[in-house]
Image (cartoon, rainbow, N blue to C red):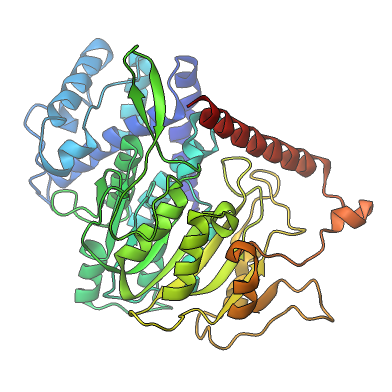
Length: 495
């Protein structure tokens, strides 16, 4: 992050502690910042040299409240939010159900003045984007908010994009886009002169037509809109690349060249109903879609099937999935067999623990290319990179960085993935990169793709044990994962 961005993030985030004392959560604060920064940018766009019609009615612009203090400022901000929530288009979507959650008028005044001092439009989209991404990361780090589940580690996102190497004038989807991290990384890759030199038509396509996203959670959807807007993706007053809603409900109709996504963690899809006694109870949500291979309440299996639907016949995908997608029987086995039959599921990256904000997560990235309909099995071999065994990261003391994934990218060989070399051999049993032929895979119980071969050093050599804090984190993760499983079992038993 640049020094300018880091300074602004530090300033803006410095306001959060006094707000926390007033009961304002990180997520609430970030939502309020979204409204205020948007109002300030709209005000700048309404002036020369831009002179845009921003759609914000007279009497409710930034300039109508930026000089106010105390109760006057609070009242004006409240009326502005209520008025803009009634507007159509993206304006109405960003301000939908917006309320002022900063109850301390003095702090609201300080935040308004701090935002007012910056010239947001004249900042490069890189700097604006860095600032907002920095705030999103701060929000994700707040364990209590639960916002981390919408935040995929940026080094992992960048590695997935680098492996897929998206091309200009092609479309990219993320059916559960969170705050838009995959879109931003893909935009950065496509706009990088080291990769492509874009002409005017390609730049316009990148801004307005490349991306298609969905986000279920309303506040996260608003943050995604703002994040993309700050990075010059989509037009806040015209077409917008993200829709709010459950992407699993129906086939959206469009077909894309690439899907990059990290579906939300949590095994079951459920919906909260109120019974005759007025008590709330959860019911499993099963999606009956004609385009799915099988019916399941497992969210991740449904997302894998949905991704297969929205890919073009030559489309390619990189998807973060939990371990259960690789080994679960029943619907899980059907989905794996269909993937191996109808797509080229060529690569699996086994991810280490300690990289996600939600503890207890054991995940992988599956890479597959969709193929035109054919009676022949499309997957001939599966290459697996074990980045989990004997690898230990923590979010604060030892976070995963870009350099940690360079070896995987080199093994993946994005320039020509058909020319790969194993690092595993009988002479080098700890090699992390290994090829499995399709016949070996099909012989495995339930067609399991949960494959590992490297010996865990901590089981054989006490001197190889990780640092105590890493061990403690691992124990906490395993206990939380077990607790979630028991809670899920209890729900099943009490239905």
